[in-house]
Image 1: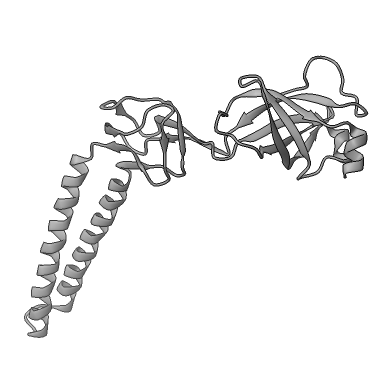
Image 2 (image 1 turned 90 degrees about the horizontal axis):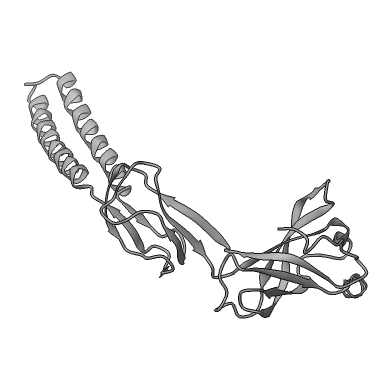
Length: 239
């Protein structure tokens, strides 16, 4: 973002500064394992709810390993039970019983490990939103770390604007302004949400984040236009 045109902004005049819309949350979901995708339940632009299953991987091998580990636990527990009875009859040493107990603990740890692996076999939506980009296809083999879905939460769109740092004298959170978007050719009410934490020493500007307070059904993240602020005189009186 930057100032509209090459002219400087006069704080005594109404100002129009370049602005663009961002999603409240956005992230790229990646694979935690190397596997083939067997379910890819969303298309680009499609909406989803938090917790919805978005991606599932082929984990037949891991599921088989889990069943094997469960069987090992059952066998180890039976061995422990038998050894426990034999120990009570003084037919087995306490050390052998402790070793049997250790085998049970080891087998249960293997089950916990396989359970953790199987949790990586699906990807659920971390928040409600839309798919910005689908980066893979169903039945595609992916490696750990490969990006799969670019998703965003557009329930509340944010406006990013770079303004002169001198405006901090009157520009505060809650200050109301308007945003004209080129894609819709419409004007929308907005208000300042957060002031940036650092002033750029070269341009003497600071980034602010606002939110659209009107209807946003026709808006998309990435749209751009102009943030329209009242004159500095009116703003000072408003403050």
